[in-house]
Amino acid sequence: MNLAQGALAGLKVIDLSRVLGGPYCTQALADHGAEVIKLEPLSGDETRGWGPPFEGDDASYFRGINRNKRGIAVDLSRPEGLALLMQLLEDADVLVENFKPGTLQRWGIGFQEVLSPRFPGLIHCAISGFGADGPLGGLPGYDAVIQAMAGLMSVNGEGEGGPLRIGLPIVDMVTGLNALAGILL
Image 1 (cartoon, rainbow, N blue to C red):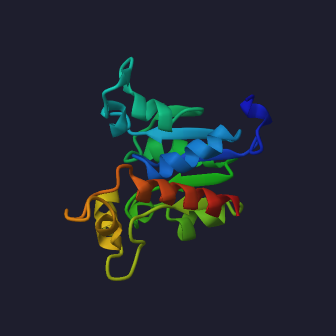
Image 2 (cartoon, one colour; image 1 turned 90 degrees about the horizontal axis):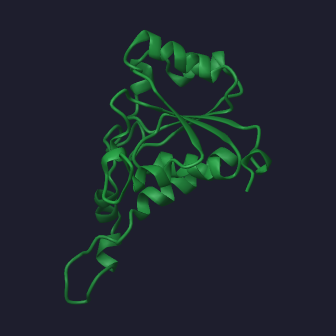
């Protein structure tokens, strides 16, 4: 498929996400023609090393979940990195991130305080395990932990055995698909 002809051609997405939930969402956007620019730390996304198998120096996992994206290494802890991010957002339609809640505020670019007033049409998709508030607000979310907390492990495995993790990261994948639906809606 010629991505320039996809249903989302003309949509520009800045992807600050990592591991699976966010990258799975932006993979689907890219697969349907959106221009997705993934910003990685200078050390690279940690999933580059999640192999085997590997394709060259990168894990197949990383290559698959980041297909059809353009990538750039940026140090967002430095003013120059944040300035580059703000420049990229000038004509962006969507920002996807899965930092712990409050990270953008700590960097001085909170959505309500800075991004929304400066980029009023920007869709900000913030993915987190438990949201910003509530009894577990701000805590990191991990697929296996959420599978256990939600009871998914209790309905998987052998009848005589104990709880068993589902064989794929279903929570992260569903999270990515829900993020995709939210952006498209």
